[in-house]
Image (cartoon, rainbow, N blue to C red; front, side, top):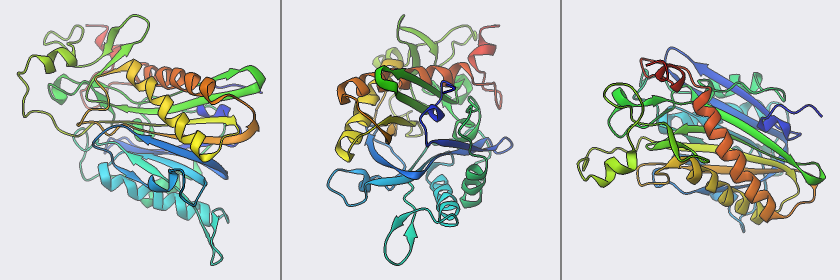
Length: 323
């Protein structure tokens, strides 16, 4: 099997982007048209989500048919309606007796401050993302829901660093694949886990290097300046067989990847959320899966930074390094 180091390395997953380069926003759809056992974990305190209640153990619906990640703040949740239309048109959904209803959880980032605040992904854009979906290599960086993603915003957009969308995967014993796709729009800094070095955050006044968001917070000089306009959202997927409770556990354990690479994370000003999808019949220990899921989430976050490009005057690290 060809591996792309992407969430599409899990059989049954397709990814499509809609990118609005003028409005600086977009949406990304993760299609699982045959259905996937799903779970979710929302650890941030300023989330924008749809259909997350049904992911909890004990609730009726077990499988979903797509996940939508979108820009546009709460307006961007409309993109999921277009994904539902796409799936319904292909006879895909939860059987109700009165027709099939596609199940499409979604999460959004706040990107209204970087581009045109009137440009928000809607139903037609979600539909277009489905038409573009592929099970091959996934475009990364400033595409789809990552188009308007920014990190290190504690000193304002004028000192922030451009981020985007990243994906990664790993195959372990028994042919089990665990993969992640993450959109990084954090308040805090992105850290290289092995060194603890800040690789993206609030830029220093001279443009060389970064200040520490945590240290700025501890200084006590920023009271009343923070806004809940930050979110790291993503999907973890595997070809291992999981029940709904295990899928929720996988999403919860995968959050450790955010904690390893974003400092601080899961604050009152972030809406951090991860979905988990199980497609396949492979056998694996949930402890191993959760551990690897945290690793691939961390790798996907780093790729979101390294694959980003300078947009709207907000530099990506590839350009900051030239300063």
